[in-house]
Length: 371
Image 1 (cartoon, rainbow, N blue to C red):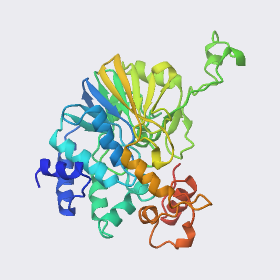
Image 2 (tube, rainbow, N blue to C red):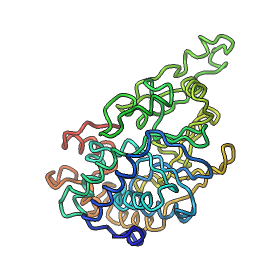
Image 3 (cartoon, rainbow, N blue to C red):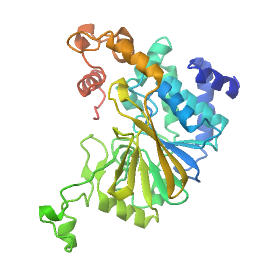
Image 4 (cartoon, rainbow, N blue to C red):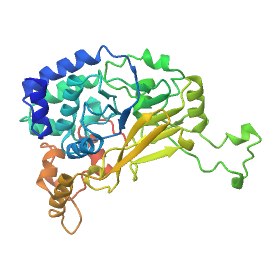
């Protein structure tokens, strides 16, 4: 099937045949294997954070920021899971990459993983939409192994899905990572997609910290990496960021991975910025989303937007199925997120997007649970 025909179908929200997805994934891997772990691109470019299967919001984002190839895009990962349209979302991005390889770039997120997608919706979505067959899930998760890890814009803006790693001090160390595999539980590759910045408010004169004494000044900050409460990756503070940027002659870090109520969040006086692009996350969080339009290294604009009208209709449909307990009873939701092998009573009147449900689902699948 021609790429333009595929795009026409995908923009309408239609599913592609399994045999077509297989062929497209093969071509996608052929394209990505030629790329380094760290790609270099130039402004102007629009940076996009997590989308998480919210297909209608992806279309809304394109209507606001411009479609490919009129606008250059860098996506920071997490295309699947949580939302109800992960297949439509990732397939549109794959075909756009094949059709316009120099206009759109896709990084790997922590959800581009076989293990994680078995717990957070994508695996079940593939089964439901392709007649209980796991082939589509296999084709796509195999393709995830080829996604690049990081991007550098204008030789000074470092972009990654998650954050920094105690195992990575230089860009060259990222370039030699063996990325063509499942994301491991630990190590540099895992840290790049799982880690988070952490701003420490306790470092102040009011709290008795003397900035003229460097050892004391940095003692309460994340001067060293701290184990992340997510169960993978690390948290890191300002001093870690400053050291990494200085060592690699970079000026700022752009990343995704964390929900932001306003669509973006700035850390350490602008040294690190989180971009979040899934509005009303999981169709219930009420947050805004944003895309970062970079016109040059120091000229940029956060284009903030709200959820697509189609999502509001979807939410209204969910609200009509709420009982007095507030539990989700919609068959639509159950079909996507509850295993056929699990007793219906097990998940009756539960919020399928809650951490409790996700942990329970992961344990039933014998998959390690990450926050």
